[in-house]
Image 1 (cartoon, rainbow, N blue to C red):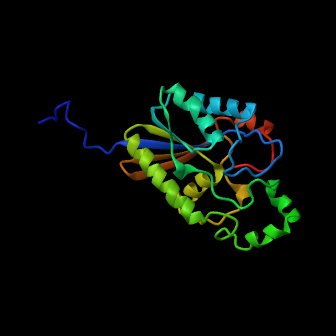
Image 2 (image 1 turned 90 degrees about the vertical axis):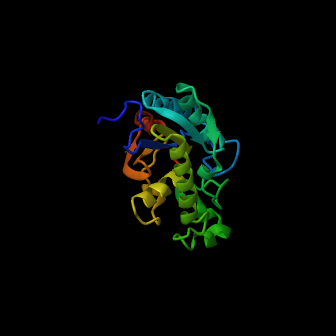
Image 3 (image 1 turned 60 degrees about the vertical axis):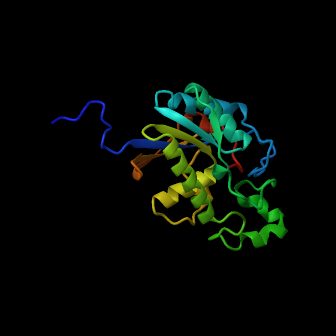
Length: 223
């Protein structure tokens, strides 16, 4: 006997959670802005956000989440508008805590001018300069699970920051959380996409919708 066409499918539903890093920030002082308020997208950053929205325009996005920081909400706005959705703010995808925020420490070289901060650099395994890596993973994992539940059978977009996105990627791939920040594969307005069948991870992929604009971006500290 064939099943009724109205009967629910026994097949697990496929859901994708896209982790979108925000676009370039207007940061003429080249400070590490971290969780500081008042740092908005630059003109280039807004174009990056629009390219990400265009990239996702034909995707089945039903849920959009953002970090509470301005640069993330401004990146989420065109994505949500493209799909007629509102942006849900989630503190769990906030930037990592960092003792160096507000200082011009692009690439780490600026730290040489602040001897009082040197003790913060003694333990890169934790790391000693900020939020423990494992804590970042735990809150990001909770946020991904929540987004997956909200978009079950469809797609969700979560706009966050480089460090949190990279940490959950390392954990998902079973890699060490200890890493060189300069080697993170998480460019501005990039997508780290987690696809699940039911609650089981099927695949992880990475893409750069704004790749053509990256050579124009300001080099230096960011998140």
